[in-house]
Image (cartoon, rainbow, N blue to C red; front, side, top):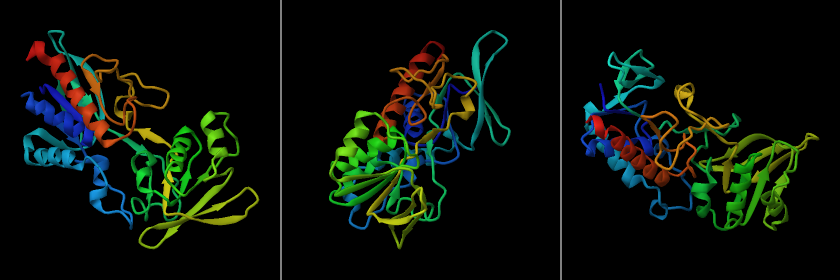
Length: 306
């Protein structure tokens, strides 16, 4: 029986596991990989590594420590988490892994992250993180006086376009739908001199050499246009990896795990951190902080039985 099982090996999960180890908890990190989204970083021809604040130094330190501590990690995806009671009535949780394993624990931290919604078009896979990425929030400051394209329909894409518009020479917002939102942000984008909005356009392809250089789109009349871009941002949304606990904890309408200020979920003894939760901003350093909070909350929860 573990004191704590942390599910997910990204920034939030790694941080939570290391903090738990520091608290002398009997902890196990269960994950399919270590590092999560920090294993990918945007490469641009005009940017040197020292110009970007990634939070990788912190994450890589935690990652290296978990790689060294074999006893503290289990490299396997998780299928589901169940709540149980022992013969004395004490509550515990069972983590079921893809290979059929059943790991028992007094508490759980869910840090499974989220995956980007992709377009599934030619060139997208080839140029991921080479001029094409999924987070203007993370990378907009690198595109000063550059031409950019944002693809997306909802608020996420509008926020991406607005953030890029503050630094980029030009932003082309490509929307696959034809409706015109009544939001103040949409109206601001319509009025911005360096923003063009293409409504009802289908994205056909991303083209480039070593880096993504252009996006090919088609309008409702079938006219095909190639838009040159120094950076392309796919902002179609995020899908939280919360399926394993969909029947255990409360989720919001987007499938994100609801947490309070202390990273507690709707189930006592279950905590969550990072992009899979309702916390603000999908950022590495935010996830690191949320992972630390979740570990401290779990430790406080476990204190009476330690």
